[in-house]
Image 1: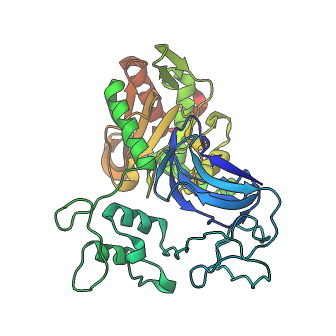
Image 2: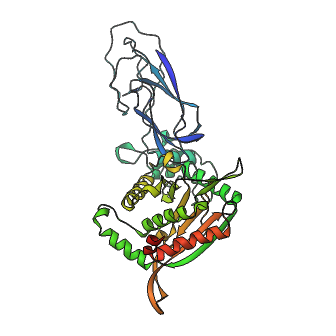
Image 3: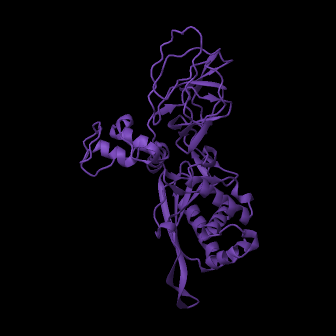
Length: 423
């Protein structure tokens, strides 16, 4: 038999570390090749890692919530043929640890209650086995809260269904009130009512990227108000078009299509800055990023080579990326290689702002809310659908002339979508 160490792989493109969110296996479980064993959170997404080995889990080398660098061992798996059964000294009530070679088990990574082995009529084996305490039942967020507050989950009386420790149980243990219970001191003496939120994974990576963007790339922002009444009417027609059955076209879809067309006419915006060589990289394909707000933070998946997609295909791709991002399952590949980003601040009822570049991209377009405003149309003041477009660009790559022409191009087509057929 051989003990194999599974080292944390690079789950994306150049990622250096990840956080262990939850283990899918326990010591003694039998796993097959490609069985899921652990869920990790990288700087870009949640990823479930499969086992590269078939055998018995010997040791979990890293606890949940710990951050591990790529290449460090996280789990030990014993491979090879099982040894003959041997007598095992008594363990904790209701649990019998499965030693290496202690007989075959079904290949499953699902935790289940161990069944005590029948006595074996052989001479006792002199093996010291430490009792295995039952692991408290709690969700990963509750375990993380307990770690942050310095609470030992094993000492917290559970009140949740089926004996699950809840968030309220941990908070009561950390801040004891009239209800007695075993408590460990909090990590820091915060004022009453304050809560610490650990910054990790996506939020930490986003914070670092935005600081680097703001203080590395010289930002310039321009904005323009646009009468998009014809775009709104076109969106309504698309919703009734059989080609969009099962989809829900929105003005953002048409903004995305117009941006792709405008980048083809102004390729200097579909570019990035190479700091190592101090060169401008002009990209052939438009990998269009769409900023999505999720419970884990802001992620920016992108549609690869968006210019090759027909409008219904682009609608489906945008919907799929948004759904995947909100469930936390965006892959690192989906967030890598973007060349231009759109952020829709209008969904929050905001008119506009100064979007920060998604490095190393040259430009980002913010789309404000579309609302009816009094507007001069054909010589008279009438209610029209109006929005604000805000374009930020990297002044190392893009000068004011190019940025202004690109923004005016996007605004012109959104004002009158039929003009796209004339260009």
